[in-house]
Image (cartoon, rainbow, N blue to C red):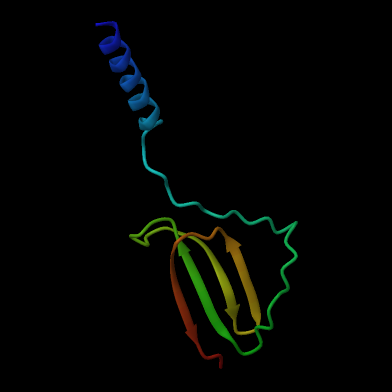
Length: 91
């Protein structure tokens, strides 16, 4: 009888440890640290190539952009796993 009680308690404890805190793991969003960034600025002369980042798969909320805009390097906001790539020609 004591063995059955001990095994039941041990299984209950193991199950509680496996459950954890619950919830799902979200997408990590990388925050910019412009003051500490040492990345070289690309040559954007006559280049239009932009990546627009969104907060979720519906792509309704823009959270940042990175890329060249016909001579200017654009970098603002955050990056995420949801994005669109745009490219074109400069006039």
